[in-house]
Image (tube, rainbow, N blue to C red; front, side):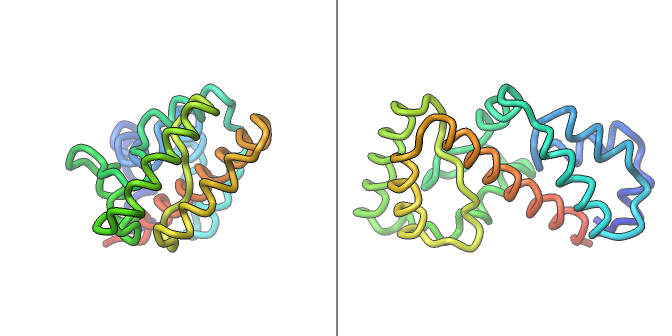
Length: 166
């Protein structure tokens, strides 16, 4: 979708379009109300500022929508398509890597009580595994901050892709 079209969408359609980027109502509303944008960079700046205001409960809600690293997103919707493209380099064909990711995901979830979230786009499975293992050494507060940062990165990539698509 081009920026000009996004600027002109009715409220409900804009909300429906943004929800797969992240299902945080306050973020969606902040982006929509700031329209029209003069450029993609201006839209991204507003989106980033809105993402900096996320509350822990909003992040937890958004995490519930994300598949585990190494697992296929369910469904055929836009969010599943985003996730599948983002995790394309995680090489699920490597059985040893898949098992290590599964085991470390389980350890992470037991330790932090949430799904491990990382911007997978641009990373291969081995680098994701190393990051997962490193983050297991984080305190709960460090991990809360890193998770929020990773979610912001994912959302910004998705939003930029959305605005750049024909």
